[in-house]
Length: 603
Image (tube, rainbow, N blue to C red; front, side):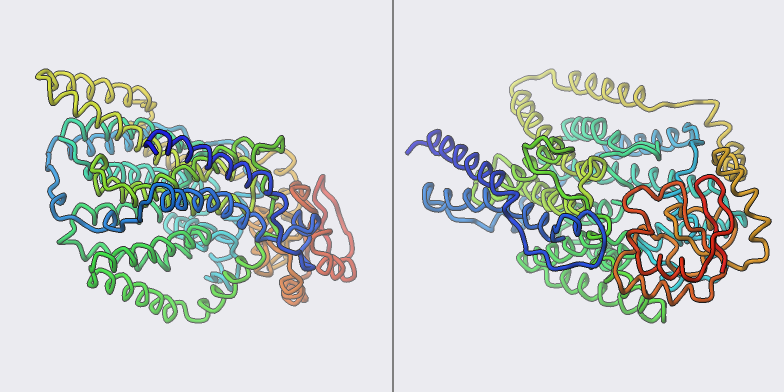
């Protein structure tokens, strides 16, 4: 049977299998056992593992068909030598030009950051409140997980803003937003370094590598911007994942002299849990796979370094955090167990007319295709693709595959979009590699390549400079603008109703040491300058009977509760979602006053 016929049969077989997964999507169900958490999953009797199982089968069934076709039709066997390191490829072209181009791009990013206009849009009392109120309480009692039920990560919700406020000796919405803008700058710089490390690995000359580097930057750098209110294809919460990729890809470039940076992999194992819990799952999967990779290549010393440092940093965290470590473990287990039932939005059926189905379908198909290509590398002994390219492609595929797990808990358009960044970089990298490999062959027969590449590089740089909005006035006034922004009064970011409520409520609660929120308006504790009485300040993330009873225990001495707010209809009302807490409040607190959407109840 000819190669073309085999490929056609394989293509049709994969299409049939994907069609099968689509048809059976809604029939793949784990029996729903009664769950006390009120949310979309429980209302629809939807088990929290249904969507992950459907996702896995959508990718795995075509993959199994692909592997069976390779084994029984094409009579091929998997060759794991594709994962083994080859010393013949360890020589990397060193070029000052290439390095200086990278530095120049980073300089441009700094100038872009200095040029941005700081966001002055009204406060997101729900999402921004998640960070403001937790950090504000921590200013008083220095608590971490013991003082705040953390949904995302202690650095994201608490330590980041708190440390900035301590440094400035002033707490403000502007300084919290400046911190987020700084995260984005750091992310963009790390993305440049990652692309630099990827570009260095390919068997191109300096001109081709520079072309690849500039082209991929031009495509990738704008997958995230400084608009804090918009959803991007990349999120700065992926910083630990980018750091992991930089370290691992740099290892591919220094196979025989690379030990010390591997220590940071062990550090990431625990640090990422403090940064963002969902990213920590991906990081620890990647660390495990990289350890297996070291074993395959008999790099036992590297394996020991990663394993030992992971154990070391977990041990240091245990002893340094003391009692907070226990709260961290309890908090994290609670989030893993309950968060999908609390936040969950059922994933749309692929190729359906359900909301966000089109975006989800595209991502599922691209991830499936990347997985098939990755496994095809294990069958293909052709040197068309270098060893390093194969490892990079497989690694980015693993990250893309795992990243889609973020969208399986809350499957709306915005969360699905945030999982596509690495996937897009993966495909852009692949297309550019194919294109430049063709150009490489073409210029082997021609003599005018220097002028061609010089012009190409200048054009790419020119487009990049034009794409970055540089503002000389903003750059020269940056220091003054930052000072004005971080010290801008919080009332500037509030609506008239919010300002009026804050101004009228402050005198009423002046004699209270704390207040308790029973509204999704998480920022109120910060805005009223009263720490939340319990750790359950972000009531949107609470749902289980256990957490409701714990909350009741913590509010038994509370004298003031803000019972309703502006964002309570974002999902199920707290009064409906938390019936046990609501019953306790209505039995022990009386309605005193109401301001617009807000209702205050006193004991």
